[in-house]
Image 1 (cartoon, one colour):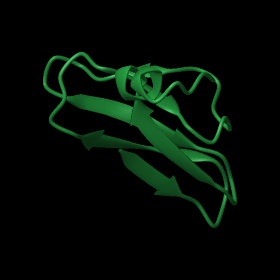
Image 2: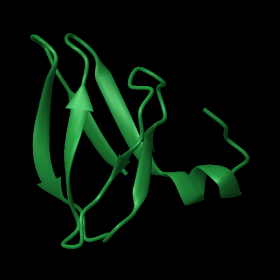
Image 3: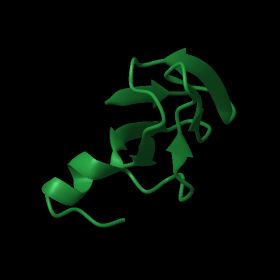
Image 4: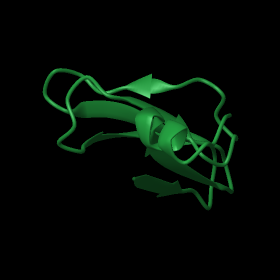
Length: 68
């Protein structure tokens, strides 16, 4: 899980999470598009302005029965 918070404008941050080529979705639904980590486990994580996004592996969401 990756959590991004912004108290200003929308933005993004490059982070490494140790999961290669993994599709991840925003559990809050603020960001509709999924992201996929690269071969080194890095991705550009997005967050809307003045808000929070909680990014979770798509496979974990499916195991929990969560659809976005």
